[in-house]
Amino acid sequence: MIELKPIAIAYNKRHEIEDDYWGEVESKIVLDRSLPEEAFSEIESFSHLEIIFYFHKVEKNKIVTGARHPRNDKSLPKVGIFGQRGKNRPNQLGLTTVKVIRREGRELTVAGLDCINETPILDIKPVMQEFLPKDPIIQPKWTHEIMKKYWG
Image 1 (cartoon, one colour):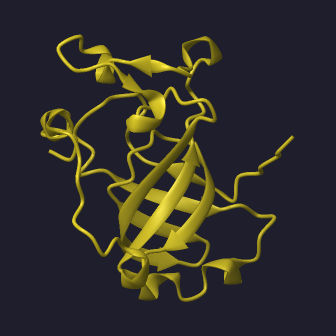
Image 2: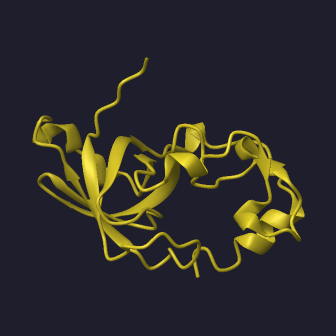
């Protein structure tokens, strides 16, 4: 058994689960009171962060453990859940790289966090060039098609 406690909550204007148009979304990540403010010390010195969050609105009966058509689009190939970034994952974990806008005490404002209002944040890590892939990124052609409007 693994037990995780959110380290923060994300607040933004997106209240409904949607697949596209996340690029303009700004979110305020508020550090949980159980953690000291110094947990955010110097976080604003990084341009980007990786945010690990919990898809808390996914209904348990809609979790996919096998393969499905991304976005339930039958024109796309059937792909295993671990070969796509859909929210209906076995452990309901999301991961997104965001841009840091500012930090004010226990609050961190970021751009591009693709989660809805009041999403539990499980962890935050700084993006460091040394951790980025050294090799070219390779991905199937269909992924480019579904991502056209994602950040739009």
